[in-house]
Length: 178
Image 1 (spheres, rainbow, N blue to C red):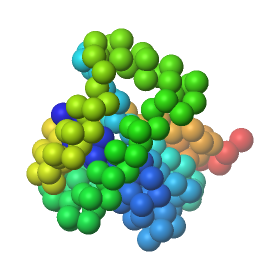
Image 2: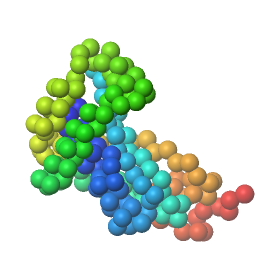
Image 3: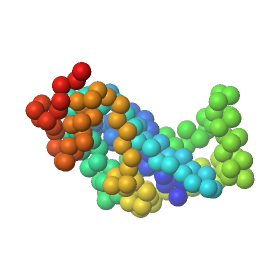
């Protein structure tokens, strides 16, 4: 499932053209930017979504993020979205050895994978369908199992811990910051 996860990551937000950044930043003005990344090895893998959220919009933005991630498992990418994400994923693997840091990461990946995978990964990305992307999103992108890490002031963190985290907190619910 590595190739469809790579394509999903690029479709959602591994670049400024991803749907997370487009919806949350461009349409809602609720974030300074969002990204998604997939990493995998023979042993395990992770799918990461992260970004910076304006404090006053934190609760509503997290609710929108939840909805967008759930939608990834129910909606097929359009042919244009799929083509754009596949192209970006292919370009990203061609840059694997551009810097000492990325070359070292590629070497670690090679050791964990046990074989050179750039060629087979590129072929798998090219063969990835919109249904493949929807399937891996439904299987692996599960907001109900996500770990949310928030770095902010005490009032914002408290407001996000309210019984209904998808509803914006009112000023009365949040204690005054020290």
